[in-house]
Image 1 (cartoon, rainbow, N blue to C red):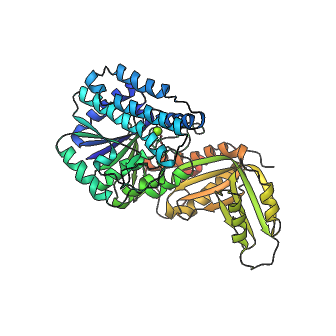
Image 2 (cartoon, rainbow, N blue to C red):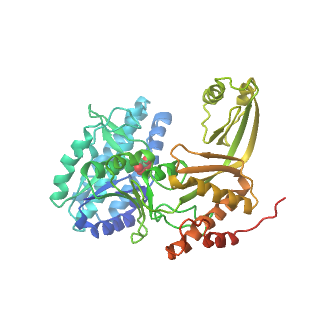
Image 3 (spheres, rainbow, N blue to C red):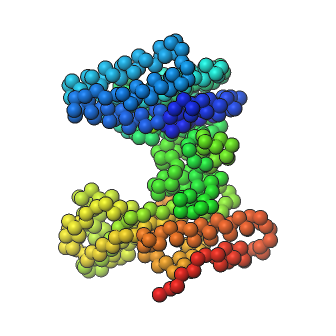
Length: 477
Ligand code: ASP
Ligand code: MG
């Protein structure tokens, strides 16, 4: 069995839905289970409609009705096929009328409201699959064992789901049916609808895959998998073949296109591979996320985050006094400032935040115990790679920065030890990423072509040096 998850853009209109059916048809012998998001931006539109009803007392679901009606029309749905879908649109309208009258919108009602997106999309796609002779049936996730706690808007699936889901799903696939299951939503023990948090369909898919012992969970997106770098910065960025769960989790935090760390948890428990595929380019191999990698290149991907502020805090108190870091971090917490990178010494701490914050008050707070310097216009460059080769990665990264004449201003290696991050000037970030990409990925290619050639123990193979010669040089001041 495989689980195939299609996100909003993969089911955004009739044409995309026809395309999904083609992809599914070519994999029928693998007993697919489909997990779907709401069509296009429907979740956002539902939230906006809820807000309009609640704040302005108006019912505005034109956009949502139009998208679903147009799609059904384009797919030439019969009256019988529409019978499953129209009542949901009517129920949605009634709910919005209700909200507009009582002017109340609780987290529980919000989850009920957004659930219509996924409930509509699975019905439409299942009807289309049947009309092209793929035996399919739509399910609201609670019909196939999804039970959550009552933490509306980011509910957790309860442990029983691990048994309930395979009990329901496996007989369906064994009977030759393609279950089409709503992502994102669940129901608590009192039958209230809940959601697993924005982007939660990935988690629904990995949960089915892990609990049913599927061969893999496929997450279909609109990119060729995880890329070695942002293609807007690095022209020859390319898909990474395999990454570990740990590496993929770090990538999620640093803005690379992957799934949410929480979505990987079920598959991490069972070791089920997650495959990131491109629905616009189904033949491309995609990226495989697996428990561990035996032989691998030092670096998976290089990312950068721009427009970062660096704060240097040096204690003005005596050496060895305790409580300094605690005071520093509580000052940030009091002002709800979320810190990204941290590096400390005995008497100082440097940290980074997104530039959007006003730090005047924070500086006042901290100046009782420290001297504070705030430096804007920085960027974080992050290298995600092999835990055991961090010395090599650091050495090469610093050498590269030295060659192109870019000073590194702060360094930190995350606890998971798959990520090495450092700060450079914002204007230099793209150049650094390109240079690192050239060093790590071009030399890798050359080396892979002649694996046995380098004598054991000899570091810095000529290939790496050769790649470096290609680096743009900059006059050092
Ligand atoms: N439709 C939901 C959202 O937009 C869930 C998902 O797409 O994964 O967040
Ligand atoms: Mg969505």
